[in-house]
Image (tube, rainbow, N blue to C red; front, top):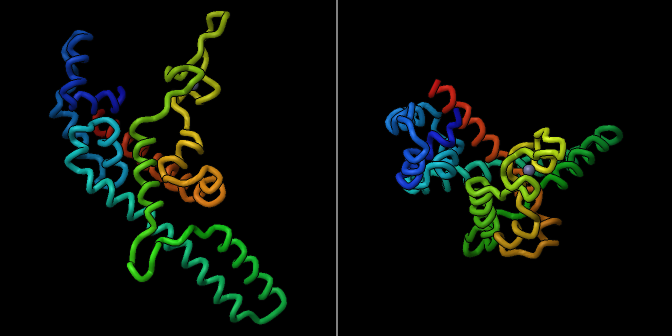
Length: 224
Ligand SMILES: [Zn+2]
Protein backbone atom coordinates (compact mmCIF):
# COMPACT_ATOMS: atom_id res chain seq x y z
CA UNK A 1 0.00 0.00 0.00
CA UNK A 2 1.33 3.39 -0.96
CA UNK A 3 0.14 6.29 1.18
CA UNK A 4 0.97 8.68 -1.59
CA UNK A 5 -1.55 7.02 -3.88
CA UNK A 6 -4.02 6.92 -0.98
CA UNK A 7 -3.69 10.65 -0.45
CA UNK A 8 -3.98 11.31 -4.15
CA UNK A 9 -7.52 9.87 -3.94
CA UNK A 10 -8.49 12.97 -2.02
CA UNK A 11 -7.81 14.98 -5.17
CA UNK A 12 -10.93 14.88 -7.33
CA UNK A 13 -8.96 14.93 -10.59
CA UNK A 14 -6.92 11.90 -9.57
CA UNK A 15 -9.95 9.98 -8.30
CA UNK A 16 -11.21 9.73 -11.85
CA UNK A 17 -8.08 7.85 -12.89
CA UNK A 18 -8.62 5.42 -10.05
CA UNK A 19 -12.11 4.55 -11.26
CA UNK A 20 -10.71 3.97 -14.72
CA UNK A 21 -8.42 1.27 -13.38
CA UNK A 22 -11.49 -0.64 -12.23
CA UNK A 23 -12.59 -2.07 -8.95
CA UNK A 24 -13.86 -0.44 -5.81
CA UNK A 25 -11.16 1.35 -3.83
CA UNK A 26 -10.38 -0.48 -0.61
CA UNK A 27 -10.22 2.83 1.20
CA UNK A 28 -12.71 5.65 1.03
CA UNK A 29 -11.51 9.25 1.09
CA UNK A 30 -12.91 9.37 4.64
CA UNK A 31 -10.58 6.53 5.69
CA UNK A 32 -7.65 8.31 4.12
CA UNK A 33 -8.54 11.59 5.79
CA UNK A 34 -8.90 9.83 9.14
CA UNK A 35 -5.47 8.22 8.73
CA UNK A 36 -4.02 11.59 7.89
CA UNK A 37 -5.47 12.83 11.16
CA UNK A 38 -3.37 10.19 12.96
CA UNK A 39 -0.14 11.66 11.62
CA UNK A 40 1.27 14.04 14.25
CA UNK A 41 0.86 17.70 13.29
CA UNK A 42 4.00 19.42 12.09
CA UNK A 43 6.30 19.89 9.16
CA UNK A 44 6.11 16.26 7.98
CA UNK A 45 2.32 16.21 7.79
CA UNK A 46 2.19 19.58 6.05
CA UNK A 47 4.72 18.37 3.47
CA UNK A 48 2.81 15.13 2.98
CA UNK A 49 -0.32 17.12 2.15
CA UNK A 50 1.58 19.54 -0.06
CA UNK A 51 3.07 16.65 -2.03
CA UNK A 52 0.04 14.41 -2.48
CA UNK A 53 -3.05 16.35 -1.63
CA UNK A 54 -2.71 19.81 -3.20
CA UNK A 55 -6.37 20.67 -2.62
CA UNK A 56 -6.01 20.05 1.09
CA UNK A 57 -2.58 21.62 1.26
CA UNK A 58 -3.96 24.89 -0.01
CA UNK A 59 -5.94 25.11 3.22
CA UNK A 60 -2.83 24.82 5.35
CA UNK A 61 -0.19 26.51 3.21
CA UNK A 62 0.42 29.05 5.95
CA UNK A 63 1.12 26.28 8.50
CA UNK A 64 3.64 24.69 6.14
CA UNK A 65 5.45 27.97 5.58
CA UNK A 66 5.47 28.72 9.32
CA UNK A 67 6.73 25.24 10.28
CA UNK A 68 9.53 25.44 7.76
CA UNK A 69 10.59 28.90 8.87
CA UNK A 70 10.61 27.77 12.50
CA UNK A 71 13.00 24.84 11.96
CA UNK A 72 15.25 26.94 9.74
CA UNK A 73 15.45 29.83 12.20
CA UNK A 74 16.05 27.50 15.16
CA UNK A 75 18.94 25.86 13.36
CA UNK A 76 20.40 29.24 12.42
CA UNK A 77 20.07 30.29 16.06
CA UNK A 78 21.73 27.10 17.33
CA UNK A 79 24.72 27.78 15.09
CA UNK A 80 24.91 31.41 16.26
CA UNK A 81 24.95 30.18 19.87
CA UNK A 82 27.83 27.81 19.08
CA UNK A 83 29.65 30.82 17.67
CA UNK A 84 29.01 32.84 20.80
CA UNK A 85 30.10 30.05 23.14
CA UNK A 86 33.30 29.55 21.15
CA UNK A 87 34.04 33.27 21.24
CA UNK A 88 33.53 33.32 25.04
CA UNK A 89 35.78 30.27 25.37
CA UNK A 90 38.57 32.02 23.48
CA UNK A 91 38.02 35.19 25.52
CA UNK A 92 38.39 33.39 28.85
CA UNK A 93 40.97 30.68 28.15
CA UNK A 94 43.64 29.66 30.71
CA UNK A 95 46.37 29.07 28.14
CA UNK A 96 47.87 25.84 26.83
CA UNK A 97 45.43 23.05 26.02
CA UNK A 98 42.55 25.22 27.15
CA UNK A 99 43.37 27.82 24.52
CA UNK A 100 43.80 25.21 21.82
CA UNK A 101 40.46 23.66 22.74
CA UNK A 102 38.80 27.07 22.52
CA UNK A 103 40.45 27.76 19.15
CA UNK A 104 39.24 24.43 17.75
CA UNK A 105 35.75 25.21 19.02
CA UNK A 106 35.90 28.60 17.36
CA UNK A 107 37.17 27.25 14.02
CA UNK A 108 34.41 24.65 13.89
CA UNK A 109 31.64 27.07 14.91
CA UNK A 110 32.90 29.58 12.36
CA UNK A 111 32.87 27.11 9.48
CA UNK A 112 29.40 25.87 10.48
CA UNK A 113 27.96 29.37 10.76
CA UNK A 114 25.17 30.31 8.34
CA UNK A 115 24.76 33.69 6.60
CA UNK A 116 23.04 36.47 8.51
CA UNK A 117 19.31 36.10 9.09
CA UNK A 118 18.78 39.86 9.06
CA UNK A 119 19.51 41.74 5.87
CA UNK A 120 19.08 45.27 7.14
CA UNK A 121 19.27 45.96 10.88
CA UNK A 122 17.74 49.42 10.56
CA UNK A 123 14.73 48.19 8.64
CA UNK A 124 14.69 44.90 10.54
CA UNK A 125 14.25 43.12 7.23
CA UNK A 126 14.99 39.40 7.02
CA UNK A 127 17.35 37.86 4.52
CA UNK A 128 15.08 36.98 1.60
CA UNK A 129 17.42 34.19 0.49
CA UNK A 130 16.21 32.07 3.39
CA UNK A 131 12.62 32.69 2.29
CA UNK A 132 13.36 31.73 -1.33
CA UNK A 133 15.24 28.68 -0.10
CA UNK A 134 12.17 27.48 1.80
CA UNK A 135 10.00 27.84 -1.29
CA UNK A 136 12.56 25.96 -3.39
CA UNK A 137 12.81 23.10 -0.89
CA UNK A 138 9.01 22.72 -0.88
CA UNK A 139 9.03 22.75 -4.68
CA UNK A 140 11.73 20.07 -4.78
CA UNK A 141 9.92 17.81 -2.36
CA UNK A 142 6.47 18.22 -3.85
CA UNK A 143 7.49 18.01 -7.50
CA UNK A 144 10.65 15.89 -7.59
CA UNK A 145 12.86 15.93 -10.66
CA UNK A 146 12.46 12.64 -12.54
CA UNK A 147 15.59 10.56 -12.82
CA UNK A 148 16.97 10.94 -16.37
CA UNK A 149 18.24 7.34 -16.46
CA UNK A 150 15.05 5.46 -15.55
CA UNK A 151 12.49 8.21 -16.30
CA UNK A 152 11.06 7.93 -12.80
CA UNK A 153 10.49 4.18 -12.82
CA UNK A 154 13.27 3.51 -10.30
CA UNK A 155 14.39 0.39 -12.14
CA UNK A 156 16.21 -0.43 -15.34
CA UNK A 157 15.67 -3.45 -17.58
CA UNK A 158 18.97 -5.01 -18.61
CA UNK A 159 19.57 -6.50 -22.04
CA UNK A 160 19.35 -9.94 -20.42
CA UNK A 161 15.81 -9.11 -19.36
CA UNK A 162 16.75 -8.83 -15.70
CA UNK A 163 15.29 -5.75 -13.99
CA UNK A 164 17.46 -4.03 -11.41
CA UNK A 165 17.29 -0.91 -9.26
CA UNK A 166 18.39 2.20 -11.10
CA UNK A 167 21.92 3.09 -10.01
CA UNK A 168 21.56 6.80 -10.66
CA UNK A 169 18.62 7.39 -8.30
CA UNK A 170 19.02 4.33 -6.10
CA UNK A 171 15.51 3.14 -7.00
CA UNK A 172 13.80 6.32 -5.79
CA UNK A 173 12.87 7.46 -9.30
CA UNK A 174 13.86 11.05 -8.56
CA UNK A 175 17.15 12.89 -8.28
CA UNK A 176 18.15 16.13 -6.55
CA UNK A 177 17.80 19.32 -8.53
CA UNK A 178 21.03 20.80 -9.82
CA UNK A 179 23.03 23.53 -8.08
CA UNK A 180 22.10 25.76 -11.02
CA UNK A 181 18.38 25.18 -10.46
CA UNK A 182 18.66 25.87 -6.74
CA UNK A 183 20.68 29.03 -7.34
CA UNK A 184 18.09 30.25 -9.85
CA UNK A 185 15.25 29.69 -7.37
CA UNK A 186 17.14 31.71 -4.79
CA UNK A 187 17.97 34.42 -7.37
CA UNK A 188 21.70 34.13 -6.75
CA UNK A 189 24.67 33.12 -8.87
CA UNK A 190 25.60 29.48 -8.98
CA UNK A 191 29.08 30.06 -7.54
CA UNK A 192 27.52 32.04 -4.66
CA UNK A 193 25.20 29.12 -4.05
CA UNK A 194 28.05 26.63 -3.99
CA UNK A 195 30.24 28.78 -1.75
CA UNK A 196 27.74 30.19 0.74
CA UNK A 197 24.33 28.62 0.48
CA UNK A 198 24.74 24.95 -0.38
CA UNK A 199 25.24 24.04 3.31
CA UNK A 200 22.08 25.71 4.67
CA UNK A 201 20.09 24.52 1.64
CA UNK A 202 21.13 20.88 1.97
CA UNK A 203 20.49 20.99 5.70
CA UNK A 204 16.92 22.21 5.18
CA UNK A 205 16.31 19.79 2.34
CA UNK A 206 17.53 16.76 4.31
CA UNK A 207 15.62 17.80 7.42
CA UNK A 208 12.40 18.26 5.42
CA UNK A 209 12.84 15.03 3.43
CA UNK A 210 13.26 13.11 6.72
CA UNK A 211 10.14 14.74 8.18
CA UNK A 212 8.17 13.86 5.05
CA UNK A 213 9.35 10.26 5.12
CA UNK A 214 8.48 9.91 8.79
CA UNK A 215 4.97 11.31 8.23
CA UNK A 216 4.55 8.86 5.35
CA UNK A 217 5.44 5.94 7.63
CA UNK A 218 3.10 7.21 10.38
CA UNK A 219 0.27 7.31 7.89
CA UNK A 220 1.08 3.84 6.58
CA UNK A 221 0.83 2.55 10.13
CA UNK A 222 -2.50 4.32 10.65
CA UNK A 223 -3.93 2.71 7.51
CA UNK A 224 -2.95 -0.81 8.53
ZN1 LIG B 1 16.66 6.29 -11.81
